[in-house]
Amino acid sequence: MKIAVLMGGISSEKEVSLRTGQAITKALLTKGYDAFSLILDRDNFVKALMETEYDLAYIALHGEFGEDGRVQGLLDILGKKYTGSGAVESGITMDKDLTKKMLDIHGILSPKTYRNVEEIKKYPVVIKPTTEGSSVGLYICQNDKDVENALRNLQGKEIIIEDFIKGDELTVGVLNGEALGVLRIKPLSGVYDFESKYTKGKTEYEFPAQISETAYKKAMEISEKVHKELKLKGATRSDFILRGEELYFLEVNTSPGMTETSLLPKIATLKNIDFETLVEKIVCSVEK
Ligand SMILES: Nc1ncnc2c1ncn2[C@@H]1O[C@H](COP(=O)(O)OP(=O)(O)O)[C@@H](O)[C@H]1O
Ligand SMILES: [Mg+2]
Image 1 (cartoon, rainbow, N blue to C red):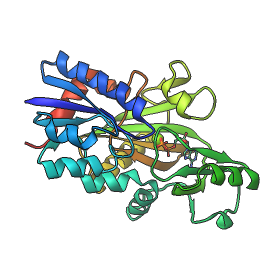
Image 2 (cartoon, protein in one colour; image 1 turned 90 degrees about the horizontal axis):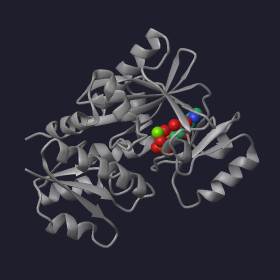
Image 3 (cartoon, rainbow, N blue to C red; image 1 turned 45 degrees about the horizontal axis):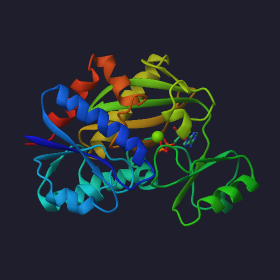
Image 4 (cartoon, rainbow, N blue to C red; image 1 turned 180 degrees about the horizontal axis):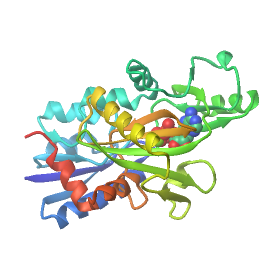
């Protein structure tokens, strides 16, 4: 079986994807797979997927045209198997607003969403693009002026406005429907922004998260529920804020980062799964 590791792409997370992708190719080669890196960009995107020879696509792309169902749809049309969630499910979870609405049906708590700025009752609020990742375009607004500034900078993008929840930042990895563990993120700057996410030493990680047993269990259960109810496959990672004992769901990632500073590989070690084995398990989870 020949595995093409798809990486790069055209989203704002392109550089992150390249790092994730290289690490995955290396892991697959270590495990003895016939794998190679397929770097995609705006010019070769469709052509490369059509003309390169491979049996399985390992999707190491993030964001737009990678994690949002569109590359999955293209691979479906080409009759190629791929890792992770399907086209429709990837599309839904890429949209933070739609995801929250769907999970609300299942009683999963998330920060209150405002449909427009006039509805904002109290500060702080978070304004972020509905379909970006890696904290790109994230604004924490303390007043009307901050909101104006955020809206100006995000012009042309669909946005989501929600209550800012002050609490502990948690993330939970799920592999094939089973939660692997809870990790607590402690960004030294106080905000888990792009820099904190990808610069070594800018964030401390606590795994397993030192939170109450009840909260830990709840985070595991909710993440499994998110994975199941949204019909996700392979590996996913759900982000939360824990305030007291209240757990607020922020978003689910269907193509979690696998870089040196990434969270899913750290969480997997809680189940004694090393990086190479994690990658292998993701490949093996693809239905034959
Ligand atoms: N409503 C919120 N309250 C508090 N912090 C938030 C909120 N929304 C986002 N954040 C912060 O911004 C980060 C990125 O937001 P998230 O919704 O996970 O999007 P993404 O990771 O796709 O950029 C979170 O990890 C968290 O630190
Ligand atoms: Mg996130």
